[in-house]
Amino acid sequence: LLLGTTISRIFGTIFELTAMNESKSIQRREIRRFLRAQEASFQLVTRVMNFVDYKLDKLSLINFDQSLISDTLQTELCVNQRARYLEAVPVCKVSKGLFPDCFAMICTVLKKMVCENGEDVYVAGGLASCLYITATGEYSFIEGYDRDADAEDVTGIHPFEELSLYVDNLPHHSYLIAKTFAEMYVLEGDDLVESLKNTPGCAAMFFEY
Image 1 (tube, one colour):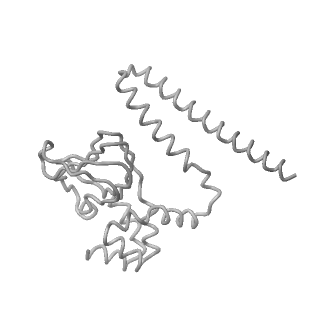
Image 2 (tube, rainbow, N blue to C red):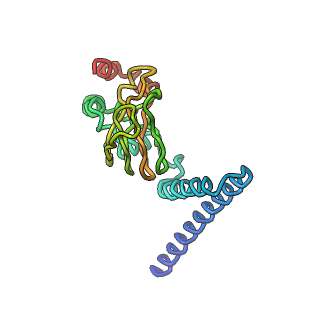
């Protein structure tokens, strides 16, 4: 009986993996068909498909039916996954200890951003609209307006353009460029305000900060 149960689980796992791979293959074929219809160049097709493969591999690891989990548990999962990124911002780290519910709300409104190798995350002179927190991959950071100036290599968790959360139409004074496929989280000012609106004490702390 035990052997039969084990074999059944193995076949079930194989079936799930096969279905997942088939779904990914269908999506790849649809994207290739779309690119052909757009008469995209070989170089562009290669870049797009490399990016798609990266995204599909990531999604296959984390995709699940969220209706199976309550809103409260989904929030706790967000905190478990994203807290260490927000803690890179001093005021957010303080809010975790003083206003944990508000901190959890901020975690839920963080948005994941995926960049391809060589992609500009932002450029000097453009308008800053959100806080960026690097998560994975490698980046080049160039201070100032000269794109050819010496670049600083960035890896790990680092926040950029925090001031954009408090100031509208703030221009970038630097460049941030992804050197590899990379992931980061972004926090927009409107989402931060929405997270703070029901917690006056935490909102006041952010304002004074």
